[in-house]
Image 1 (cartoon, rainbow, N blue to C red):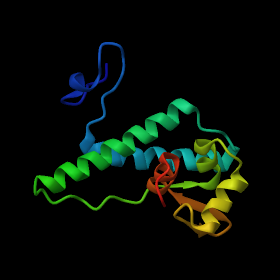
Image 2 (image 1 turned 90 degrees about the horizontal axis):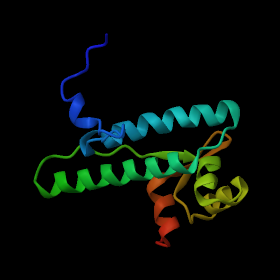
Image 3 (image 1 turned 90 degrees about the vertical axis):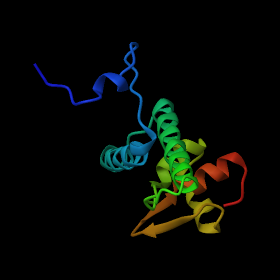
Image 4 (image 1 turned 180 degrees about the horizontal axis):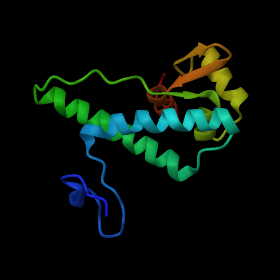
Length: 134
């Protein structure tokens, strides 16, 4: 039998859903993005819409936590930049990877080159999806 960590019961709802505290949402998001990026690079797999929604929810929770920490005067840890590959960005935008790279090259998405790969800033991608300027 496995011993559950302290506070485990408060994180698991009766329907099996897991609540992610805002204080760790950014860390969980970064770990998921690293794993998903490696998987997509290895097998060219696609990220499901449900996983995309989870990633954006984690991103929003992390941003909200950072803002609340700043407003409360608590020194906030500088959030790490979350980057997605052009292929992942294309899946979220429901467009081709070439179009996502074109958006990056034109500056409409904040992005950088890492060797042959374009890495798109997740916050910039979300702003673009909402119709805000990059």
